[in-house]
Amino acid sequence: MSPEFAATSPGVFANELTRPNRQTLRCNVGHMSEAVSPTGLVALEGLHALKHAYRFGASVEEIWTDDLDKALELSDAVAPDLRAVLEERATVVPTAQLREHSAQPIPTRVLAYARPRTWIVDQALPTVGQDTILLDDPRNSKNLGAVVRVAAAVGAAGVLAQGAVSFFDPMAVRGAAGLQWALPCCASAKLCRQLDELRPASDFALVGLDASGAVFDPTDFPGPTIFAFGSERTGLSTAVRERCDAIVSLPMTPQVSSLNLATCVSAVMYLRQYARGDHARPSVGDQ
Ligand SMILES: C[S@@+](CC[C@H](N)C(=O)[O-])C[C@H]1O[C@@H](n2cnc3c(N)ncnc32)[C@H](O)[C@@H]1O
Image (cartoon, rainbow, N blue to C red; front, top):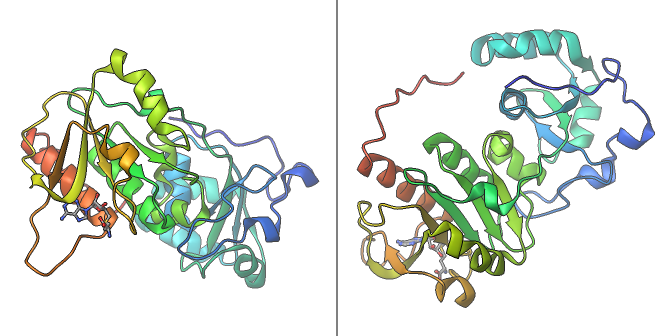
């Protein structure tokens, strides 16, 4: 997919309307926060987030670094396809400017801004051989990001979230390494109702994950399947639970209560991938 950059001069915002605003871009570390600034831009904190967003077609509007040589060196090592983009588009800015506009220090010293991608629920529905992940009111943006990263790695059909969350929260983008542009990621406060409407035509199974469920067998549910995972604090909501065709669990050592949300998603998705015999793709390492 070819990247699409806005027609602004390198290093210069087209006008004041597209200039990121410090107050609106800053977020609370680890928790859901203002996702997209009123300017409509999303922060890509770090070279890896920029790399993935760029590869999967994000409209990247601005790239800042306080050390271009270091950014180019890193890009040669982990993302050679970014070198030309950095050379052409990156603006060297003071270190204080990078720090001021990011939620946390950025080790790779690259901060970029891109337009978010709008996905709809229908695009994230499962197919045979591609599961969908449903997060029921996730509370931690780092978990949200980690789930997107796993979903992209295993080739999931998409990630749905029930509740007032944003996949484009800066910490979620950082946690996902910018993979929100790689597969459908859609949050909705009325997701249950939307799924009720879509279900007759799509005919998917909805399987909830809860520590009290029957032991999970990844060979069950061979058709299109949505796996639903509960909130970090309260688990599966009644609304999602009562729509599930089955509730399953991953075995736990006695006296250990539950897995971290993103860890649980990862285990389930990889068990599914192996059960399908779809794990022959080699890993090409960090690039
Ligand atoms: C941190 S846990 C939530 C724990 C929460 N206190 C509860 O009461 O369920 C987040 C989600 O991960 C999934 N999960 C974690 N460990 C699990 C396990 N052993 N089996 C099935 N699902 C699990 C569930 O979907 C759960 O709602």
